[in-house]
Image (cartoon, rainbow, N blue to C red):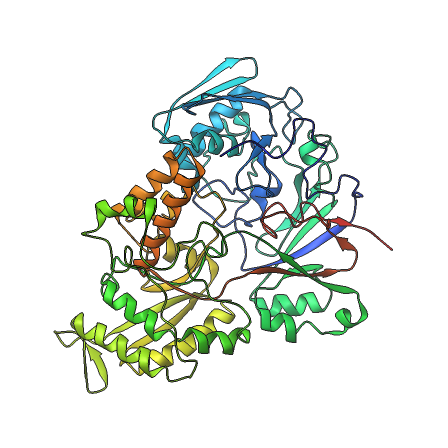
Length: 571
């Protein structure tokens, strides 16, 4: 995205892969919920979330040891204009689908069009910015863009490529288990039972096994996913040996509950994987399409009432630090105090409508560590009074006498978030607010989130060291009222749209950093999410036969790490 790729043209393998890793063995993961589709590229249905990463490839592949750098995968070469107004790819002659048929230019053009017009919303933003896509030779494709957006040349290299002939006379958008899209990746579906388990096996005829980009990756012969009703059952299955690897996100549980006999014997190993990526945002998001969360004063009161220090101590033992901004833990995070320099220059045109704190500086409220949290609750009540709410008969009511009551939507297997919500409800009771937790299964949750049918719900956005076009999906005003949009809080803030524009048109590192820090200020001052704790280190428990390289990627444990560069070695 900026500067030069870190690896030379003749690199042997990705720096965090072991090119001499042995092939063979298996890994068994656990998912909660179920699945009713194996087409991960459409809006309808619930597929296993991992499947699109292990069975499908794009023209270029990402190195997770650099902020945003791509190397050739299905494409053997790439060319782009100095201003990146167009990009041209040349396909490798050896590139093949899983059925052995060659990947053609026709397949590529069809994939971009079908995904951009009828695929999942995550794919449609690029298509809207493509001016033309055309064949330039037997294996060449040129894509021209309609706007000034330097990231599009990279985004264009990351779309999955599907086989056009498979879908002739069929409805691509029909969800189900009968038509599994034919991919180009290293794994194939070997066996499944709807909602219960999925087994993938390494394709012995995988076309890309000798590429430097793939050397030392995709080492396991079999990947199996078992599905469970909730996280507690999943954990017990791991302790019983039904699973061979599990990620743990609770630091206190990691310290206190991973002492079962298999760990004590050394049959299960606890590995911690550090990283240098942004924290992203995890917490409880408020739906600003609905009153009373359309008022920033109410949202600030909700933040004040959430006694993070007490909740964190109760749920995680106080070990995990709080998320202080959307890009915490990186150079992209907003700086404390008033905005200065380029950041202020970007925000100043919107000064009249920016929420308080965006220019002056904003920091999350801190509690006193006690269960009562009196000072913050007093401040919360002052804000609620300013917003037209007052207590009558122990109940907080608006000017028309209607009580302040709302639902928080949770997945059936919410785990530690459910505990946090229960503690939060007690604090809100002291303000006269009644919060009701509603737990639903994964399918219901997905439907209600897509339809914005919630007052408050759980929220998670992973963010990278090179944020770009995906930011429009998360925060862009155009998606505020589009069903299925990832802008779940419903924010429609012109300043955020402008900061994203500035980020995408930046030609230098300093301009880019300033735009991201300015966006971070708009998001934090908007008070859309009640942040919880960071996942500042990856925690993976696994059987001792599973190994990973000593050299870790800058992004740590994310897509592209487990199981991609792991291997199985018998004693």
